[in-house]
Each structure stands twice: as structure tokens, then as C-alpha cells.
Length: 240
Length: 138
Image 1 (cartoon, each protein chain N blue to C red):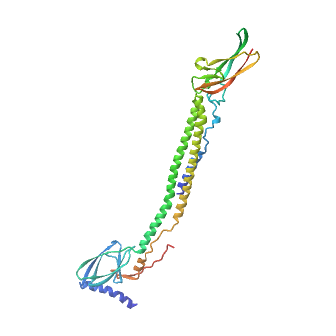
Image 2: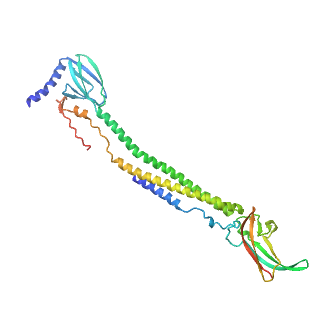
Image 3: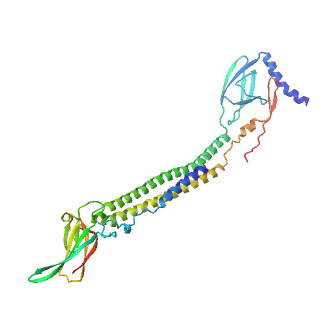
């Protein structure tokens, strides 16, 4: 046990002694993404900062950020110099796959909800037109009735009764059939919409299984002013 | 979501019920216009009075039945000119009937016999409604 504690304190003392000896260089980390990247220095110290002072020599860095891949690299730090280190962390394959699955999920869900909703809207418009046509056909027959009541030409009355009114009766029946059809369509669309909303609400949303984070969260030593602590990552998939 | 669909279905139901009413015009029920050949309302022509008179042709005496007929223009849908078709006898124009009455004559009648003639309203070359008028010779 004492041996392990001693081995953990040695790197800190090395950093401290190196700094005191002014044999250090500064590394400015210009990493994309700049706001939440982390790194493990020399396979031991987990840090989250944009500038580090290190002793001269070759240092190992493992950079990582959420949704990005771990990038391992070695950097040579020159004493008394400030060097910019530029790095763009590539997206991880898991994240790319997650984005694809999420896109497919959202498209499928959007289609499942939008298509019947659009059908309802179309059905409502159709019903509106159907009702207007029906009312129009009723009005035409009402005018025929008024025409009959005031007509004083027997020939015109005969034409009205033998041709005009039967034709307008057919138009009314046709308009009524159209209205019923549109109502039926809209009702079915409403039912399908309700069903699809309920069903799509139960569809499982894809989750990101960030394996890079699991790898990165391996046991590391995080130095702090108070002495530092161990950092251990444990991933438990709760989605299933 | 569920409430919206309930409202939607209720609205559709109401529109459907509104469309359920039978609004077709039944042609067979259109028979209230006196100018309609299928007219079945109150009689358009009614007898005011009858009289029998004698007339002579080539020294032979015959009897003539005169039936005074009233045209009930109050049943007309609106004020209008018209003709009366006497079913074979000459047409009579309303302009020649200032009091809306006309004479229907039956020639060579026998006393005690009843004679009838169908009268029709007539406009535009087509017959409208009508009814028979009858009178008994004396």
C-alpha cells in the first residue's frame, strides 16, 4: 500500500520540482472542440485545461471529447518556450452511427406523424369543399322550388319538372356522396393519426453508446492542488 | 391529442348529420301551381251560373246552353295575362275577360242533359292546369 502511494506521489513531485527548476515549457492546446475536451497526460494525469506547463522532453497525450475519438499523440516540450498545439478530434464511429440511427429514427417518426396529419388536413379541406358543394346543390334546388312557385309558363314548368329538377336532384345526391366520402376519409385519417402518434411514442429513441468515453474513463490520476484523486469510469447501459 | 381528435370527430359527425337530411325535390309533390299541367289544387274554373236559350238555323230551332265561368286568378302565383283553352274551342285571352269571367257555350243541347267541357290555362303554346266545368240544359 505504501509503495503504491509513493508511486503516485512521485509524478507530482517531479512536476513540482521541474517547475521550480525553471526547466519547463508551455503548451497551448488549440483543440477542436475547444470547450469540453479532456486529456490524459503521460497515461496518468487526467486534465481539462487549455494550457499546460511541462518539463522539457517528450510527453504523451491522449485527447478526448464527448462524441469524438481518442487521439493519442506525443509532443516534445521545449524549455522556456510556448508552443501552440493544434488538433481536431474526429467524430467517433459510434457517434456517426448514432447520428445516422437518430436521423433515421427522427425521419421515420416524422413521417409516421406527419403523413396522417397531412391527410387529416387534406380531409378537412375536402370535407369543407364537399359541404360547400352540398349546400350549393341544396340552394340550387331551393331556387328551382321558388321558380316553380312563381312560374306562369306551363312549358317552362314542364321543363323544370322533367329535366331541370331531376338533374339537380342527381347533383345533390352526388354532392352528398362526396361529402360522406370526405367525412369518412377524414375520420379514418384521424384514427390513423391517433394510432401512429401512440405507436411512434413507444418507439425506442437511439442512444449513444460512447465506447471512446469508456476507454478514456479508464483508471487515471487527476492531480489537483489538494493532492489529486483517482478517476475511474464505469458505464452501465440503462436503456435496455 | 385525444381531445383534439374527439373534437374533430364530433365536428365531422355534425356535418354528416347535417348532410343526412333529405333535401331532394319530389317532382310528384310539385302540383300547387295553376299553370302546372299536374295542378291538383282548388278548381281554377268554377261555374257562376247557367242559362239555356234558343237559336234557329234554316228554320229549325235549337237550344243553346250558356255556362258562365269564373277564372280564379287569386290562385295564380302572380298577376299575369293568360289564355283559356276550351279543349277544341277557340282560345280566349284574358284581355277579353275584364272581370275574369268567360262564357262557355254548348250548342244543340237537350233539356235536362248535363254537358261538361275541360278548360285549361294556356300560355306559350302549352297547357297548364285546368278542370271541367258542367251545366245542365233547361
